[in-house]
Amino acid sequence: MSPVKLILEDDGAPDYAHNVIEVLNSGLPPDGPKSPSEAADDLNALCLSEYAKTNHYARYLWRFWFLVSDLSRQIPYDSPEQARLQAVMKALHDLPPKEVDLGFSEQSSTAKLWKALPMFDGALYDVIHVDSRAPDDTRRKERRVNLVAFASRVAGLDIWPFFHMYATWDIAPALEGTLIPIEGGPAQINEDPAVVEDIEYHLRAAACWIVQAGYLLYDYDGECLGSKAGPLWKYHEKQTNKLRHLCPDRWQLWKERFAVVRDCEKLKQKTRQEAGEAYDVMVEIERNQNA
Image (cartoon, rainbow, N blue to C red):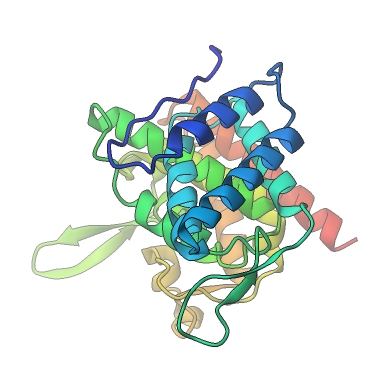
């Protein structure tokens, strides 16, 4: 796999974007000149320098996280650079805490810089839905998987409290079935994963969430406002009041569906392999947390 070299794609990026890219291009290659900790130190120094110019942490952090999330689309989901970017994120989080004023009018507008990732959630939300610079539809789908790989790795560090909605956005369409319209009657549920449009991309994204953050999804039993529900979950008779919930029953549905994808001979071997790996991770998570 060729080394990743991040480039600036956004003409409207902040002036310091080139500095961020320079730091990441030095810190992401496994044999790069900077360690993840050194890269985090440089990014933190850049943040403090930019804040000194604007006196507004919220604006800086939102644009910073938008830039980093956008850049992650250039990093193949299964590349070592994804793991290094995760290490940089952890190193940022582990820096000595510094309380900052985000500049909002509310009294509770203070936050600890890099702890719980202030402004990250909103920036990612804006990035994940649009990729106008993708050269074609195939690359758009590939780049979204790369972005999901980054997001799932951040979630797996257990430093981002609000990731559950994003996870279900990707897992539900991959694993919770599809509806077949029936003329003159109610739509029917189709459980065949081979009929899911773009199943290989949906499955890959779903597997990222399980492999990287599945242990947190397994422990979570609560509502995910704004999340999606596929028909296999939506029309589950006993779950009519838990459409947007993660709970043990939904976890078991996902595990069963990964096995179905793994065993579906109509799908590509790579898709089946990744489904099998996610299934094995789920089994291991259950074994470890129920021991």
